[in-house]
Length: 170
Ligand SMILES: [Zn+2]
Image (cartoon, rainbow, N blue to C red; front, side, top):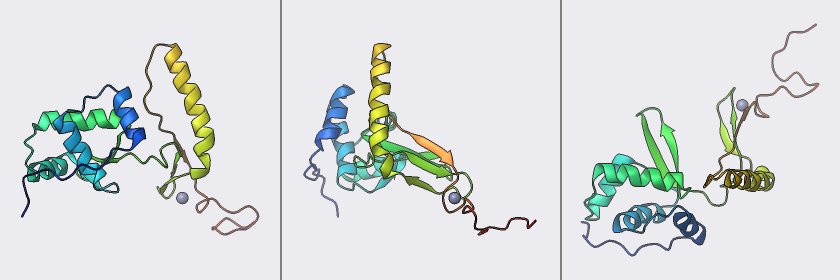
């Protein structure tokens, strides 16, 4: 049984608040409600349809298109992150990971594992600051930097000198 009163909204972390303000997003009832969905479940991922259903459960009637635009804008300014869900051809949204926000994402082209390289955060931050400054000089407003590196992971690379993987013998 769900009450029609919205739950007490979770506090918006300062960094996310700053991103909202930089993007000029007004804190409408809909924006607060959508943010609340993610703040109350920081690890959760929601598709548009799931977010829509959750909002309706809380008694908020929101237009489908309005919700699409809102999710997109929140993703564009780095408050949410989105990932393609190829199975159902849709986007899934989750709260931006502030800790790992600037850790580059590494994807192994052999085994397709993806992971964040926390050790890369500091150099990425330096590069990102530089890039955003360059953009600003050109009159653009960069809001978010996402670094992705493709390659072969340690597990898939043959260890030097050790023939762990099958290699032709000479
Ligand atoms: Zn691999």
